[in-house]
Length: 279
Image 1: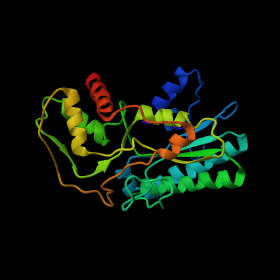
Image 2: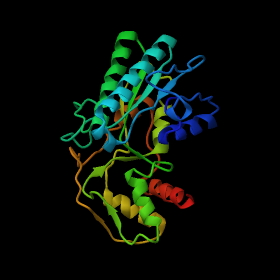
Image 3: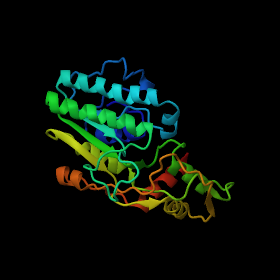
Image 4: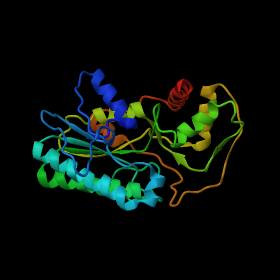
């Protein structure tokens, strides 16, 4: 597993170990380098490739490095899997952009809204090339807005949760209240990933909840879970190329593997609040 020390990777590793699966990790924090290192593939039965640069705002200031790590790094992982004869699951992102239908299915033409999504789409193309030309079993999962305990504080939901439980914060403030997102709990993401083990031929699949929620909905759910009430507002900061409403059509992955999300929105937000309270 590349990126096993990241937000989703840690959760996936814990779940697989509970199922009795031996995990061999490869990440920057453990000295691994996608651009130069060799993956420890001897005896491997499946590779989950999560390793990437992932913070969208940073991708606007360093698009070349995001492309290098996320795209060329994925090509190197693919080539090593090809040589070792090991199937792979690649973790991608929302690549559809403004103008996408709601909900959006996998056959809608991609239009990446930021350099991070662009680098992931280019990596997807590499996955499909290796699958089509080398006969590899490569599955691409397009994660929508994954959230849950353990996510970095710089992301939206941990930022809201922290403000919700902090008694010194009298008003919750976010950049923009207008966008709606398909928020999918990290544990549902993990189960979607596990469902791809043993898939013949692979394919490209959305992973989301199948519903969208506003930022106000997130705040309300966090406040409810925290058992408190606070006013909230935004700073009126609209991101470049912002997509205003997002819902994943998840029917393809459900048909292929039987996977369905199990964690409801309020239940998921409660798990975030509880994790923040422990910190």
